[in-house]
Amino acid sequence: AQKITQTQPGMFVQEKEAVTLDCTYDTSDPSYGLFWYKQPSSGEMIFLIYQGSYDQQNATEGRYSLNFQKARKSANLVISASQLGDSAMYFCAMREGTDSSYKLIFGSGTRLLVRP
Amino acid sequence: DTGVSQDPRHKITKRGQNVTFRCDPISEHNRLYWYRQTLGQGPEFLTYFQNEAQLEKSRLLSDRFSAERPKGSFSTLEIQRTEQGDSAMYLCASSFHDLRGARTEAFFGQGTRLTVV
Image (tube, rainbow over all chains, first blue to last red; front, top):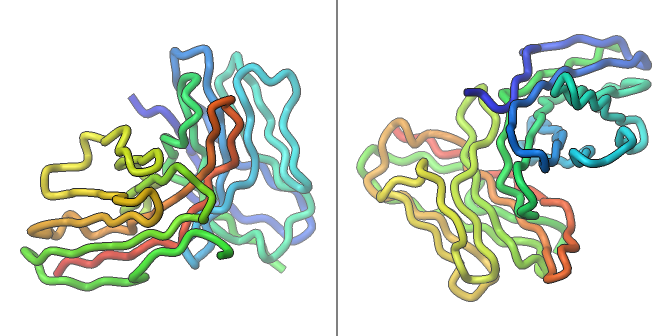
């Protein structure tokens, strides 16, 4: 069964507007972590934001926030005030268990294009 | 040292040849990870090291693949008898973990893009 599902292969957003990238996950482990990474055309994966399964509040990092709905098993990324430099692939990922390693399961990604 | 470095950035090889990639992690990072990313997909975990010890290997890592981290610093990933299905981006990442469970985030390199013709 697919562990991480990103149903939006591509998204457009107007510069300065907000955009939500969807991510749903599947796990039976009560302890897990959810990550979002950005991959520009240069190839490296850039860490954006992290949410632990026991965290009470939604994670925020600057213009990035994670809309964590545990009962729905969703962890959507919200980017506020989009910038042209936000155009990239975005990947949702999950780490299961209490192991603190970065053995991550990634989704198939969403390509975001910011229009001027 | 400003980040994770991978070499080469691109490699084209003929089917059946052996290839070796190198990853230099951030110097104080004790954990090192290899991932493979095929076109249109997210990265898939291959293996990881704590210092020089290889702690876990994915079943994706067939017997043609071998990874080493001999001195707990840089790592190499070798693919023997390459096949066209090995064409992918190979990403390396590193992080720091201590015994108390404190850790940094994982930092990724820019990857090595392998094309098998």
